[in-house]
Each structure stands twice: as structure tokens, then as C-alpha cells.
Length: 287
Image (cartoon, rainbow, N blue to C red; front, side, top):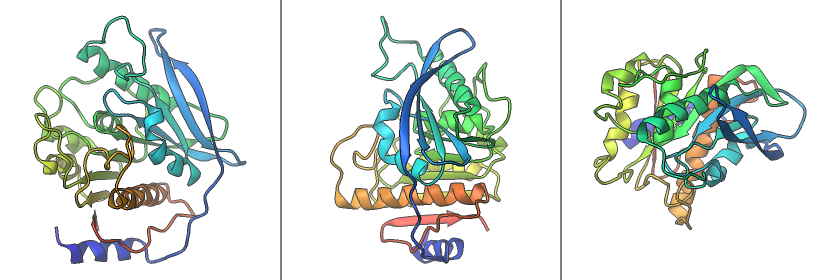
């Protein structure tokens, strides 16, 4: 992946260099009810002003929680999106008498995301819906967007979302998903990863995060890669801790890329321009 080609892709994708306006947002903690009566905690982050905004259903990483992704989700909401983020049963913040089985985690995660996609907050545009996730949650988001796993969920959204953002999606994993499983994704798809995005014993090469992108049909794919970026952008989300200036800078660019991609996917008239590329990021966009 050559830097020259990457810079060209950015400049073609976003020639304007204007600043984006940011909306005031509010956070609401609520819950929705799964088909079996299970209460699913939901965090809704939405603009406070008048208007109708696309819904983005977000699935957090394994053991995490929506509250640990505010650095990622707040800017998306402030750009004019209603973020609906369930807390899954595997979250460290979810009380349990005993840990849920992996089969339960898989099925309920997909149920939760289907609920989030069907949510109708006060200022949501019911016609425009997207899905986003990180790590395990990125796989759940991909399944909601049409990917076919080894064990299809018993519950999924009745209608495919119109766009997909996958932060650090897992690579192929026996019994979970094979490469061909991503070939059925038909929505525009952005994949975000980094050259230090490694989880020893699970994802030993960062390039495995790119397999989903490579297997998704060409036409509406974006791929963003941050040089030296790990699974949590140095602690910006998920496993929060003080991040280095470089991690913060590239995280801001990954979020800006996410917003630009969403704006383009929904053909928004007031799209947020991505602006000039910065050192350490690479972006590929299908022509």
C-alpha cells in the first residue's frame, strides 16, 4: 500500500478543506426488551436540536461497554447522527450470577444489535440506518450488514442497514466466520485498523483485520490504516488509558474518516469534508 496512492485517494475523495459544524448532543440511558423478555441496556447519544438524523447502531468490543467508547461515539453524534449502543451480556459492567456461555454471548449480541437498529428515538430518521462496531462488535455489525457466519444468529434486523463501519473486525476464525462469509455484504463498508492491531493468540498479524475488506464485493469499500495503531488506539476507547499524542492525532483522523464515510453513504447535502491527509494514515477507496 503506497503512501502516494493513499494521499491521492484522500484528495480525490474530499477536495474541500472547510471545517465541520458540531451539534450539541445529549446522552440518554434507557433499555429495550428482547424477544425473550430480556432487558437490554441502551445508550442513546443524539443531537439535541430539531431535525431528523440517521440512526447508527453500535456494538462494543468483548467485555467492554458503550460508556468506554464515548471518545468515538460523541463526535459521530455531534456530526448529526443518533447513536444507539446496547450493552451486551459479556460486558464487565453487566451483573451476572455466572458468566454467560459463548453461545449465549453470540446470540444475544446479534439480538441486541437488531433491537438497536429498530430503535426509534425522538429525532431519528427511520428511513436511514447504519451499523458500526469494534472488534467482536465489528463482526456483529458485519453480520447485521449481510455477512454470513458459521453459526447464523437466530435474530437479526428484518432490513439491512444502509452502511457499515467496522473498527478492527476479527479475521477468519474457524467456527465463527470464514473468508467467504464476508462476500455477501452488499452495503458500503469502511474498515479501520492499524499496523499494531494485534491480539496475541487470537489475531497474530494485523493484516488479518483486512480480510473482511478484501472479501467484501468491490465498489463501495473504504480501508483506513493507522501506522503504529493498536486495537484500542493506545487507550482512546475500549480499554481506556492516557494515549500518546500520535495515537490521539490518528484517532481523530479515524473518527473524521468515519463521519466522512457515513455522510457519503447517506448522500448528505452538508457532508463533512475529510480534509488533507496526515502523516501515519493510509486510506484506500474503491473507484
